[in-house]
Image (cartoon, rainbow, N blue to C red):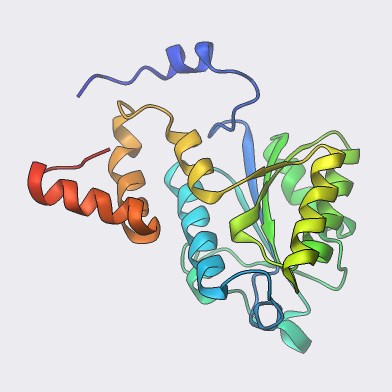
Length: 221
């Protein structure tokens, strides 16, 4: 496999791209009570995308902030499969619907020194759109992972995504983020982790990698 040269990629890459060095991932309220109210998409699909996204961040060493709202009194603990990706990281629990109105969340994001926020959460029309608009107004770039987020209805989700887009947020999907971080299959140190994440969470794309491996051997990208 060709040796990967990060300096060359960094020099050639547009500043618009999400990279392991310029992004922070913020997960907002992926909790049982919030999932119960999701009607915009299949809940299992949102859970799968959320965990795939979290594993993407971990594979590339991207700082990750986990948040919950009223965990002990209403919404329950963080999605167990999401917590399992970061077993030693305690979510920041809040009372505010807008995570950006909790100083601990803002401080956690600011401490990373990153200006690109990869944002996902429940529900899109409340706990996602509010911090997105607030962060945008303070000069952050916000990338909303639409398939790792969900709203009470399809209309609520879509209208919130439209509202965020008009304010400057960029809608993306979790696999798009994963592959944007990888960007070059010669990047050997993350090649296997990325293909493993795709195999586990990437649906038919992952199945295709399993199929290729059966006939070609090794890891197919």
